[in-house]
Amino acid sequence: MTAEAAVELLSEALGDEAVCFERVQVGTGRARRLALVVVSPDLVVWCDGQKFWWSAGWDAERQRTFYVSRQVTDLDEVVRWIIETR
Image (tube, rainbow, N blue to C red; front, side, top):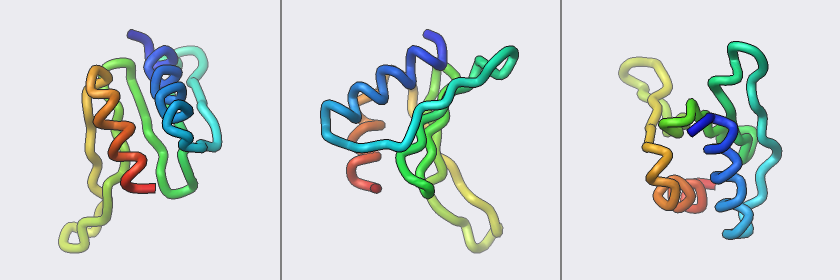
């Protein structure tokens, strides 16, 4: 599946759950392998066509953001996580 197709599925699933999002962005040229859905300024979901991933918090000990990822096939779980997080 392409990144563009995967974020389209995610945006449709979010719309079905009445979750508003700011925009869908798809890379161009070689960057076309990545796409993203901006749910809010604090929540951006990236996709490469195989996985979705997003920032899930701050690791104070390591002084860095940590990320969570899910397979594109786990779309329902990703949507549930977005609903619970936003």
